[in-house]
Image (cartoon, rainbow, N blue to C red; front, side):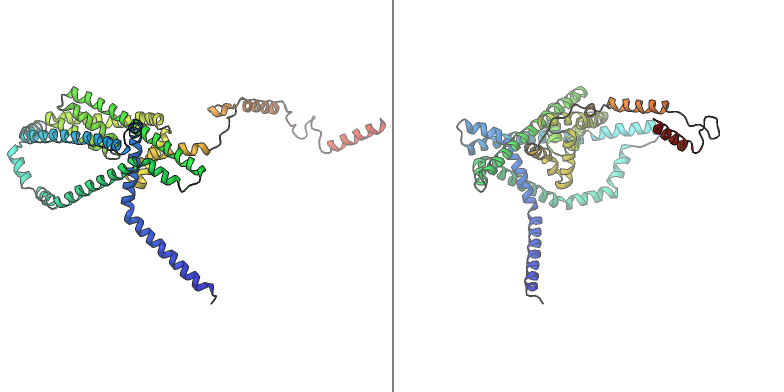
Length: 400
């Protein structure tokens, strides 16, 4: 056995063990890494506001605290307002449920010639097996819901804590990163950081603008239908549909439909239709244009980045995909050498005229060439004509 073989085997086993340990640690810490990534982008989003307040002489930690306090106060106030409104509407809907049930039963009896009654329907619902199983499952799932809520609160606290540190200690963090890099690399890191702040701020601005347009559009619809709490519902639709990826649209449209149902069941269908139509308009018309102007990436690239981010990291990837891709595109754009485009009509999708002239010349050449004579005709020179013509040409040359 060669002397190097045992050492090679030990080295290979050690590397394999390190790989397995790193893989296990990565899968155990992946949730924490995702929370840190979200906190980093949140810190980039509030960096302009914190930077302006710090430039006016305020301490950076106090400025970060004030920004976070304002955001959290607005969020808590909005949630409390919606919670009270939703509780009132649920009580109203439960009290008016017999009236809605009577109207539905009367419509069914008139159109389908049945003889249903509300008492029979209520008895059949209360005695049904699926209702009993649903109540049992709901009772057993209370602990799971409580654990999910507590886990969500802990995750939010972790994200806010890391984002506070990233925003408050931003200069110190940049100095720590640049201290281990040569001067040329330090310039590139600082430029990438600045680009990330600009692109993330542009993304937040575009989302806020789309939330404003969406909220105003739904407010007009709810006011026309006479649905109560139209301003609060409009704000709910605008914020939830834009800042909660993937399922935000469905969550945003469910609450206005529920409130509209308490007024008139047909109003809920109107709200559903409007939500579906507006969502298509936003996805294919409004969002690509606003994203292309504020984040400065192509609409197709924005759509593809959201799809790729969702496939890689789920809802978190869909939320941070566009600013991440915009930052990467702007950073790499400085290293791509570009040239002046030649003045060629094919660049604009037009065909060259030279190609058409060439085809015309070929056609004219083919039409002017003499047609071959059939064999045996008077004009056919026959076999050996070429050789006789060559001999005659040589004799003429000798005479000359």
